[in-house]
Length: 232
Image (cartoon, rainbow, N blue to C red; front, side, top):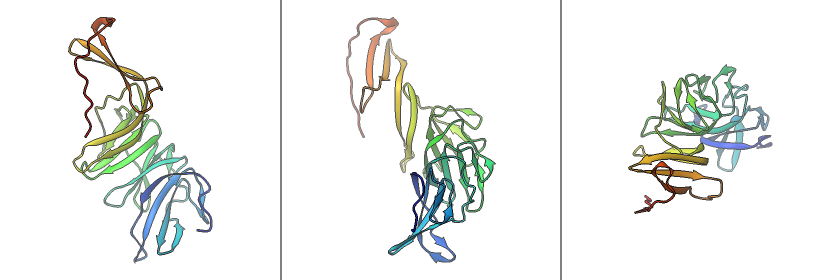
């Protein structure tokens, strides 16, 4: 390409595999740019490539596209592109931080999210879109930093993230098991048997949270019987 995007690229996603009846490979990219090569590409665009060559393409993505930064991209098996980020409109319509491009027009996913979307993943096993961020609502339902779009409605996950959490990555394996990558500060307390356990990260734990176990009713001492670290 003669000129790269004029801003940071934050997300990549496989593009379409055919254009004008000719097979080619392509990648969607999203970020904080407004142009790439000679094209106006407001925060989302396409680059196609073949042996030894690459070229930007409007796709033809709506030149108005997104009015704010794109943080994440995903595609479903039908080829629809999903974009999440800090934008509130896509193609001139209100979408609230998440939108779908069907190859012709942008559309909203219900009434969208209440805050910026930071992570997207299409799960074939669950047949839907996993969404992450610092979220408290998706559509009309209350969520905790993660949500699920089944193609028609929003659903919540009963995930009790510790403290004040922001989800930066989401994924599901072939069996539908969920994986979340997140940052957290503060603490959360839950009751188990006669003891109270606190899980916290005061920003000094580099790779794991700090676990503190206390006696019930704010006692000053307790006996730890067993602590097991289980990894799969």
